[in-house]
Length: 468
Image (tube, rainbow, N blue to C red; front, side, top):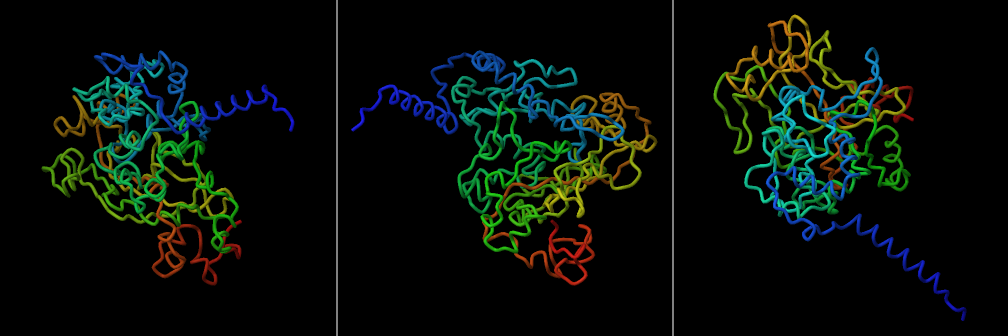
């Protein structure tokens, strides 16, 4: 028998140890209970302690989408290179962050973002706990991202570890005034270990970071406010082999992958347990007292107007190639409703597929003379919530973006489409052939550029049932 070389044995042991460390880093959190003692009088003191060991990580956060609330730089015709995201974009829920920072930034991983003077370059402004607290006691309030009083900051700091669903859900489930308000398919029901809510989270025990992987604190995934550049997307085929034979044994189903996104068949509905917002009419705000829909939601809010909530919402389907054009501050409009995000892609676009979306229809304030949407100040002193005065709210909000306000306003209908990637149903609940190919099918074939259902004679485009 050949004598075993001791140096080779040592190398093997080292490699196994390194492999173990790598695995541990991926699957376990380091115990910080003995590393952090406190006391802490402010959460910023915790951040300083974190930076003591994680200075590089802090620098990475300062460059991330989650911190900047902006996507990557991209070219826009007539405007040059721009960056689009929550920080400068419109929506038809709380309209625009500018002048409303104290309320809106309770969802931002920072402390003290209360106006346009916030320093995005200071790492001590980072809130590490909102993403890494594993104690379950840490939470934020509306006052410029400050934690609620009375939090046990030492206990929270000692618990830090890998982000859990509850960390992500702090903002992505609950913010904006109601469950599942800002995102289609994301609500507190995903915290339940139920396969029916989402086959990955409930059926296979996934956390958010199982798919939304991070490198240098740059988290994969593009939401409805940050898809302008067409980058940072996650695809089902990142995990599921893109070989059609591996995904579907049925050849016809496999051929559909050329034109139809996985989500279109595997997310037949959203808001399975809790309501989701589908309509918001700001024009009726301030006219009467609140009206309850249930213990959690208002069908009418004096502060917000009429709100439309639905359950078991069926998606709408659109061609989409991963990019979108956005209505931006100061853009004049020529027709109504205003589409706040216009999806790129069509039946003739080889990069586009049919994806599912949640649609929100709104009615919001605009300048009738300058013919553009108004950025209203909604919260705090001088905001709409103080006196329900739209003219004053418009004056103060438009000052924050250095845009002229004529003094005359009205309300205009708006439309926003939110891509759906969550609440994936078990495969036996995927939509059937007849769900689309029938008289009462889910898909509006004319909307997608077909003359009729492509399964019918004359419904095909260029004699193709499925595009190449």
